[in-house]
Image (tube, rainbow, N blue to C red):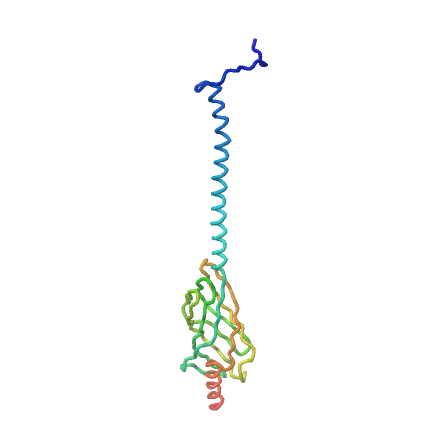
Length: 190
């Protein structure tokens, strides 16, 4: 018979099963605590990396472009009451990341603008030009006063395509002067 109420008052000696269990009981909580601490540190590092990655992705998705007519070439063609000009659209990237302008298009009665050149990569803080073509109907005496909403197809650094719009004022620029000059020639001949 075994009496469970009796206590053995002998201290456990090293190498005995009772001593080994006692040491093991002391080490398990320490190991668990160490594993928990390592997990917290790694989790914090991973969360920080995820947040930084998300912030970088958000910055790369920002499109901040400015566009304005820069020049029209003198080789424009006039036919059937309209003028077609080739020119350049000046672009400035005010965003935090690079943007590639894939194309532009704008249209309203009497005016159509579309890109004819290759896409243009603009690093942050840089400027560049994009070749465009302007079609102007001469029966519209002057370009309308309000800015023309220019649609830009842009690819940001995260390789995502975006459509943005920027108002372009055509009144008083080279494109308007050239178009009106060519239209005057059409009506003077006609």
